[in-house]
Image: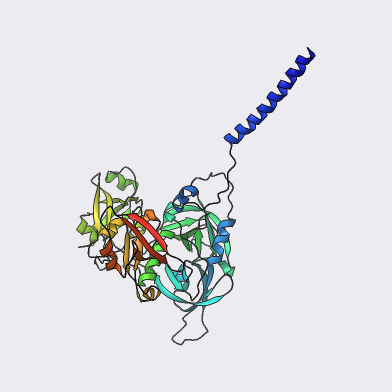
Length: 469
């Protein structure tokens, strides 16, 4: 009997031990410990990674701040005070952000407007005189250049993916306090506050409650991954200081404008040739709309792109190339992504029915200028990018020639390769291409493989992109 009790007790102890081990194993299966990611993530999956966080999870901004602050610089503009040049004059200060290692810097137009000399101070306290490459009053953007290399930069993110309530970080030099980092959330998108002067102003601001004060203008607004999603531009205030209403130019719009200023010295802006206004509830009922969203056409330019495409007064535009349009500012922002000569698919509602119209965009002078060829729907547009020949400065860096990528269309075959604007194509399938015409001649037949080889300014080595035509 005693032996049976000892044996039973031993079995119970063993059973408890096994149960404990099993419980630990099941617990680990049910609640796995997150593994540290050592390999770099596929850039195409970054958006998914950033959008799958739990809203209640703790947020740490240190990595993003460390990534961004080295690329934020101080701008001092000495204004013109008369006809006589002198060192005496009013000095205004602001912020800016380095967007390429070879010295291109983005800021607001109003930060350097009227200046006869612009001085840049880097975070390491080096100082440079800056050259103004170009300005765009319609978006309040300016592109500067300093004679420096191997500079820290901020990479552009996708401002279209921002969601209201998402954390963002503003970096700048308010009240000459260099590299000040503040945080907030996205309060609204597509906001127009009538702060810009030009008649063709494009206001579709990102609104945030991050602390932005005088001196922050021109500094970056970044997401928690440290990617640039906006350029801080304006605040609404009664006191002259931060009151929780700050506004930034969307990063996608800024990138398009800055690329044009770099490549052409001005913005190649497309127009639709329409006057529009937002939709209220009464108009939505009168126009047989399901919701008060979109932009209704109130007038058209005679002979303009809209008239040529068959648009009418009273049409309600709801999307451009599949991107929803919920207000007049959003329509302006989307149009700013395109250039004269590009063709877009416009979705509209007419007499209660939805329809699509193809519109060939033109410039302010009603010209359909072409950057790639005489046809707007050529093979390069089908592939999803715009190209041009190299300018004199670029030919000095590429003596054998090449073709410059001006823009890449979203959701296109080229966009799927992760190629970005600013890429210089020097070879196609291993064969050098001297210019755009040579590249067009060497494009293979549909269904054949293409391998583009080329370089990016400020980055060493050659980059290759594979695509099946």
